[in-house]
Length: 217
Image (cartoon, rainbow, N blue to C red; front, side, top):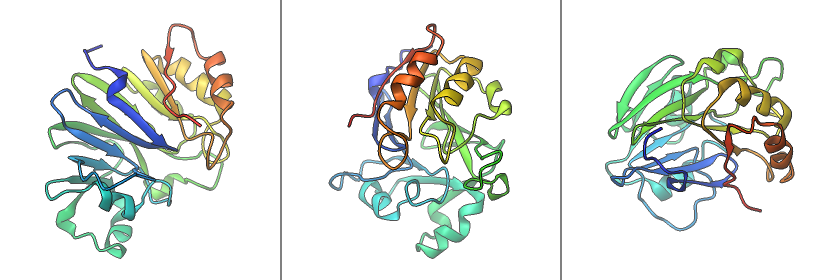
């Protein structure tokens, strides 16, 4: 892996993620419950339109004039309802690859196989970002999908809280198939799941994969 360090990543709550490159490029994914008004985002990516992932109020806190936004193509209507101009954002679909704010981005599948909460027809997505040479997979709300075990990444950030996504057991099995160097569990302990889910998850992950805990309760 590159010289990228996991201390360049913070998880605010749920799946609200902030990544800062070595050169100072600031990336947010699904910003939520942002404190203050930092207006420091160079790039904001949204995985889907649920309130705990798409929060226009929190986007306003971190956005500045030059901020680039990326959303699933299926969210055009949500963007219009919240007064985002078409010039304000870029749209992606599963399999798309773009560069924004100097960051290489690939869109990957994110959906539930049987649960009704995130149907594949909605076109919601996860992202693989290349930051300082490291490939970082941010899964969004998804089940353990067989097609995603072929994703190449150094760091995986995946939900483990169950109900709306894979649970701790399913997430560990998925990660053991994916084989990243590092995994950072998200989406547990607040809105869904319990803080102890991370212990079950870590106990089931292959010891060769480093589990880094970023959420605190």
